[in-house]
Amino acid sequence: MPKAHALGLLLLSALALPAQAAKDWRGEGDLAYSQVSGNSDAESLLAALELELARGRFEHRARLEAVRASEDGSRTAESYALKERSRYPLDEHRYGFAGTRLERNRFSGYEHQATVRAGFGWIPLAGGATRLELEAGPGWRTSEEQGTGDRLHEVLAIASAALRHQWSETTTFEVQMDVESGRDNTYLEGVAGLAVRVDGNLSLKVTYTAKHNTDVPPDTVRTDTLLAVGLNYAF
Image (tube, rainbow, N blue to C red):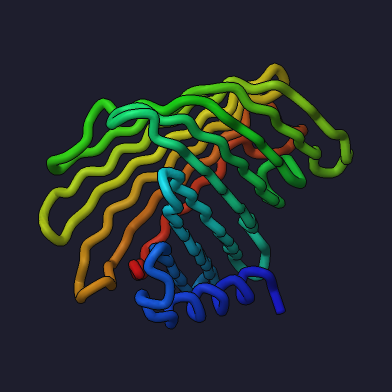
């Protein structure tokens, strides 16, 4: 079974679990699929599952994501990513964090990338309709280049920003920006999403994702983008 299809089944199974099964857990799932036929045939699939766990003062979050796209029988995108972050509040507006990012992306120029990061976060805006979180710290990344198999190991400077704005009782806008800057390559990722609740925990969601590597092998595009329209379910 293709990895993306397996992830889709995993996502659907997770959404079927009752929220009361584990009161310490909460999460959400995204599933977006599109197919176009006619003069050209194209299809795309995005499946993601995000879980949060609170234990004492520690907060843990993990996100598993798969993306596949093809046009006229040729694969144009295929990536699988796992992101994990744990944080410990220091006071109302500051916290310490540590996390990892594991990604396999056939079209990024790198067979895989693995990043470990740690640092401090600051929440300058909280409460009301808007929440803003800023993070910075050091990191370490291992990458394997497509084709050559060459491995890169580098120390990183990490920075990120996350903005969430509740436009109305049913509409939420989110932006997430991440930067991993090293001597050999700087990786940037930006995600913007708009969710409109339609019934209970179910929402319609539109997301735009851009991933950029400053240094890639020859004949490789530096930037990957994806526009996804689908469903989001919170549990």
